Length: 176
Image (cartoon, rainbow, N blue to C red):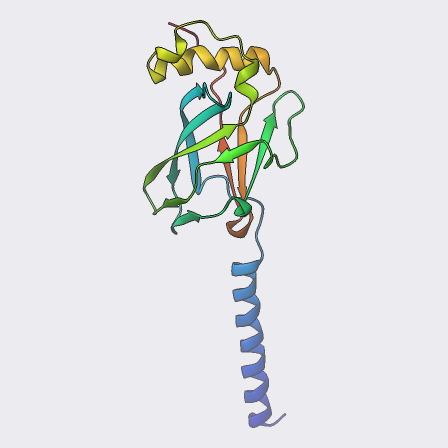
């Protein structure tokens, strides 16, 4: 093999290796990233007008890029069913997320999910609606857990970024 042929083969093999490495690092995703964006439950309330259960979270971007969601069609929100160790089908017809979401790396943002109509089924003690948000949350979490025994919070999937954000519900909170 002449030096010119070897040079061309070397260039071709190098380009092929470079292309394969680039493709693997950008297109070959190994599962859903559950750490890049995390969430903590901030508040639970019931909307008196609509009967919706309203969950407020503080989401934190732990990743290196902005976390941006502008349309509900970019999300798939499911319910976590702890008894079956399973998730539901996407429930876009039952939930309303607070959009848009824009969280730069290292920052936090308040984010809400309304579970339409489900608060109307709860037996809520009188005066809870007038309580502080932390008291509402401590009272409503066990009531929700008792009424909807297989409700373990939500998972929000953002397919374009291959992110899964766990949106928990406090089930061990006790009223003061």
